[in-house]
Length: 98
Image 1: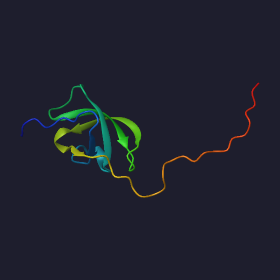
Image 2: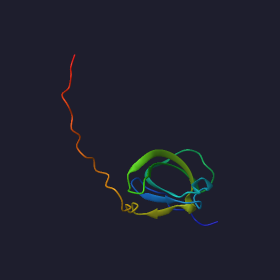
Image 3: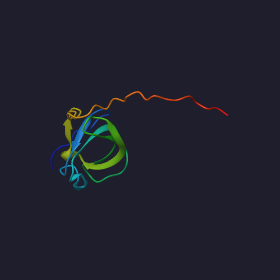
Image 4: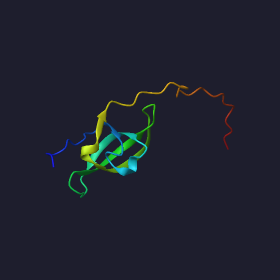
């Protein structure tokens, strides 16, 4: 087939679709932590990374088995318009100790 495919680097964001593996019927975004040095088939990789929500927040750490030719490099996903993710202060009563 072709020459060696590009390997992802720490910090890069990948868009994983069925082209990378059949497990991604619902595509996801992943921020790469590292490429694992585990044995695989030719042109397949184990990637350790954080699955990203639509707003770019990490929601789960995952180890993923993917075909290197199916990886799509992208910038972090664009946040969807919606409610803000900032916290509102809460009123707290006195604390009982003892």
